[in-house]
Image (tube, rainbow, N blue to C red; front, side):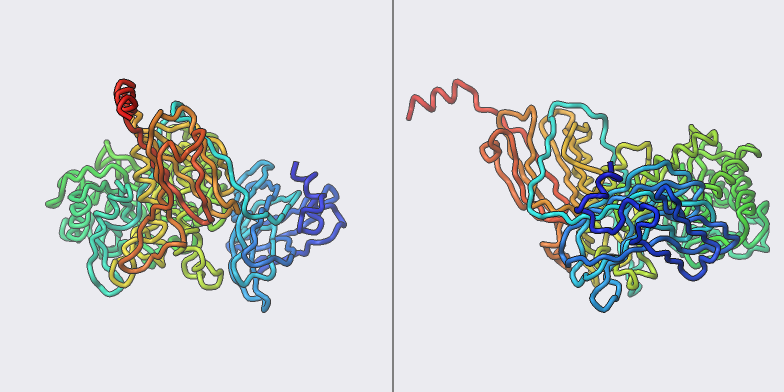
Length: 612
């Protein structure tokens, strides 16, 4: 148990068991969090409760400890929440000797109604780190409460080897690729040059593109620029760019998920009544799928209504106004094309439980369709956060009577964006850390019911992109290379049983081909200190060849030179006892390629031996 372990000398935190009166922790409250209440009860539970109106804030309990740059650490926190709007987490801020922020990250975020559970993660202190501030608290809290009753921080010794195994004869279900993206396939770079990413997206296994943040097409304010116009008048619409983009995607083999709403920086309201906006939506669907106004028969199956209406960046009206807009627009999509699937809303995070329940209950009360629910997450810590959030949202959907609705993510990546420099995220966004995070997250999501996961985004190495333009940036980012390895891995779709991985950032997944001649093992190590791993192959063929390719910071990723690299290879002779030993240094992603080789017939061996 964590509570018992926290009392031992291995915990670097003072009063990790959170005993009342035991000291070690101080209240911290950011500007705007005056509506937060912080309480430490006699049972040893720290509580951060919010009862805010329109604003939100950050608050929690902090402690600071010395750390060594380059050293490895493990953090474990026991936490729970009740109707929490915001992001509960053990927030970690590494500072240098001048107390400047080196890197600020989370551990494994939680929200909504969350039963007591342990959140654990392994990571390495960045260079220049001198102090680590640990905050048990909530970011962007508005209502509800988070609770903590134990915290553990230990230093890990590097160099040990991890024992892994894969049973090449097992059957653990099917591998799902879960590789979709935002934006593309043709995009302007920062210099205004049109770049076609089609071939690289295909190599990364991408089969579907969400139309968000394209700006020149798809946004309702672009397609229907005059909100005073008549939606029944074909002349009121500007469909040319939309038609071109859908045609380009289709010609390159990509399906489109059409986001009905606005890109970043666009209008935060429909600019017209909900009734009229729904009519605009109906005519867009009619044009794209039913040929209205000289349109196409593109067969777009998925229509997502709006983007992050529970946050201030994309919605400025009340929740109730959005609920009404969604219901009317969803009905309009179905009226235009009864075969289409409609959903949304691209929920900002998995944290707005009360907001989401309000949407679901309104949809149910008016009988509006909701074929799928979509959500987003940007989190820099443990990649297991995605799987945990998916399960939590699935439980909420089921509880509200939407067990038949699909649930998938339409934006995910590391945290960053406009505040990237202040949090030090440049250290990890363009590094193999992002590659390991992505690869591990896709492995963890295999054990959920998620059907699609749209990476944000296709382009811009410094903006989380899988690809660069090949001119001012390398053609791939390291995270894009991880998707390339996943695409190859998914070509061995029969999932195999593995042991040795964990949910703390060291993920292992394996698969074999239909004919059994090929197997692939993907290993993603985001932040564990192992010097290598020993992979034991159960039911290995008599003869086989193997090779390991790697994405890591040990290899360059610059214009003209960014690719995976072979780091080990051999045959069964180099796997004594069926064990393949491979060094690994986090952060890194490995793909082990195992190919059966024909066994030499016994009569041939006898003839050869008689000639010797």
